[in-house]
Structures are given as structure tokens and as C-alpha cells.
Length: 443
Ligand code: GDP
View: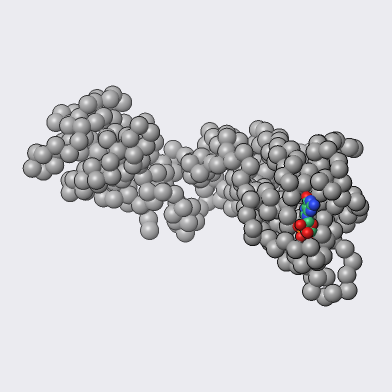
């Protein structure tokens, strides 16, 4: 549904917030008139008025603060009114009904932020960051969302859009002035510029993936030979009995998932089938899935039993890992963390719980390092960046073949379009609907 900005919207922004304060927010052209009606005189902009809010019969509903923000210096860019009241839901509902009677209509989910976007106050990345900031489960995630809201991610995207436009201009010029020798339009120069743009795109794509991880949580896979205690460790971390724990090797055939929170960051733990050679076809499939899971994970917990036999050979080099030496209650080893050749080894017992806190701290530290300087991002952004890179790859191929420069130009146009979708320079109503529907009412 399209937003009709001639309508004035009203909604409860916070019911019973800190100190029992409830906030009702209004936005739209009728706000000045409504504010005058509620206060009994014209409110001063950005000034806290103490107001007695009454119904049509003159009965007092509540007293509280009234703040008026005239357009365009407001969150939505429209005339905005904020009422701070005693946060009881019946009081807020009653006042809201009164506001609706006076001509404001109920706001839809995310409509305040959507109006801010439509009025050019925020781009789409920043609007999404508002929701991410509200949903942030950790300080690191909140900081990342704040950086996106302040425009750090948008600026990076914008810089790439501009670089793409500049390159499009050069490619088009090279078509028009094909007969003249202009150095900056020579195939080698353009080739270098295409390479450079790709490197910048790749760097941003990597940062966006990290930002998405921070918002969505880290994916951790538990890997190791049968019976080393992967399910037990998963249970100990999740303090839940969802994974099947038995003493028979090879029972964890499928991949079980558990979500836990460490330092407020969500971790999805996947318990995988044991790594070992097998003739059992079902188990074989489980092992194949285990390897696939490890390939997708941000972090692998490589679990070893009391005999410390390695299963590392099965793990691709580039995957980030922590080696867990389980069953120290049997081996007699002391609970500790050791760093060997840049890899952390944690000694613990899933049974007694000894050393478990060390593992949690180790995982938490890794998440903090990852969070440093990153901004929040979403799958939508990551996919758009991937699409931009694909188009750029095609532009480079077309350029290298020197076949049709028009083709290079066309792919570059699509690179720009994919980037534009991130900030909302190109957006469809459908996309906006999906993004803002995930917000709460009043935001
Ligand atoms: P998985 O096949 O790697 O998932 O291993 P399980 O979690 O099913 O554990 C295999 C066996 O080792 C079970 O009998 C567990 O009770 C046992 N086990 C797991 N962790 C420990 C531990 O820290 N100490 C001891 N003594 N036994 C453990």
C-alpha cells in the first residue's frame, strides 16, 4: 500500500517505557492544528509544553509533555507532535481514539520511518538500521547499527555508485571517440579502472557480510570424530537437551541446530555427524552434510576426545576454528586456553562444565574483534553487492574481449542499478512494503 502523505498519522510509539512514560507520536499536515487544539494555543517549536489533554466532553484524559517539531526539521521531515504521558495502556488508547476522532489515522508498522525515507531524511540502509538498532541484541550490534544509521555504509555505497557513473561516462566516451587516441579512454586504462572498481566492491561486500553476521548472529559448526562429545558440548552450551546424546558412535546423523546467546550475540550452533570414514550410506550422507555445514560456518569448533586424535585433516585451511579438547575429567588435563600456531585450544569437560566458561569467553572475544568498526547490514545488501560484482565481472569479460563496448556499458549500468537498490535510489513499492512491514507500529 502506498503511503499518502497528505494524511496525518498517530500511533503509540512507546507504551510504558522507562519510568512508566508512554509516548504517542503524530506526523503529517494536520499536526499544527491538532497541537493547537490539544494545548489550547499555538505550541512553540521544539519546546516542552505541559499540557492537559481532554476528550470531546472536556474530561481530562491525562497531563503530560507536548513537543512540536515543525517540518522539515523532524524525524519524518513532516510536522511532528510527540506527547509524553503516564504510560498506562488504557490512557494511551483513550487519547489515541480521541486523536483519531480529530482526524489522524492509525499509523501502519514502520510508517514513521517510511515517511522519513520518502521525504529524503534517511536512505533505505539508514531506515533498516533504525530497525536493527531497536532489535540489537548486544552492544556490538547496537554500535554497528548506529554506524549504519549515521550513514557510514550508505556513504561507501554512494562512493561506489559515483565511481561506476564515472566509469560509465568513460566507456560511453570511448564508444563515441573510438577513432581518437585519448589516453584515459584507451582499453588498458579502462581495464585498470574496472579492476579497481572490482577490488573496492569486493572489500565492501566483505564488510557487509560481516555486518550481516553481526546482526543475524554467528554460525558455528561443531565438528569432530564420533563420540568425542559434540552433542554433549552443544547441550552444555545451550543448557538444553535437544541434541541426542548417546554413547554409541555415529548417532548424530543429521545436523542439529541450537541458538544460544553469548554476550548478547546470537550464535547458531550446528552439531554435525562425526567425521570418519564409513560404509553406512545414511551416515555417509551425514558426514557429507557435516563438511558442507563447516564450509558455511563462520567458526568451527573442532572437538577432540580424551585421546586427542585429530580430525583437522578434513577441514579446509581458511576456516576459522577453535580446537576443543573435551573430556578433561577423563584425561586429567587442566582446564585452560592455549594458543598454538595462531590457533586457540580450549581444554574442558562438557560433562562437568569445567572450562566451558573459557570456551564461551574465547567465542565472545572473537565476535568482538569481528565487530570492530563494522556497520550493520542485511542479506538484501549482501545479495545486491553480489549481483553488482557479477555484473562487473561480465563488464570486464566484455571489455577484455573488446567485442562490443556497448555490452560493457550495459553491464556497468546494471552494476549501478544493483548498488542503487541498496540505498533505495532504485526501489519498488513491493520492496518498501517488505522492509517496513518488519518494523513495529509507532516506529
Ligand atoms: P558425539 O558423537 O561427538 O556427539 O558425542 P556425544 O556427545 O554423543 O558423547 C559421546 C559419549 O561421550 C557419551 O557417552 C557422553 O556422555 C560422553 N561424554 C561427552 N562429553 C564428555 C565429558 O566431558 N566427559 C566424559 N567423561 N564423558 C563425556
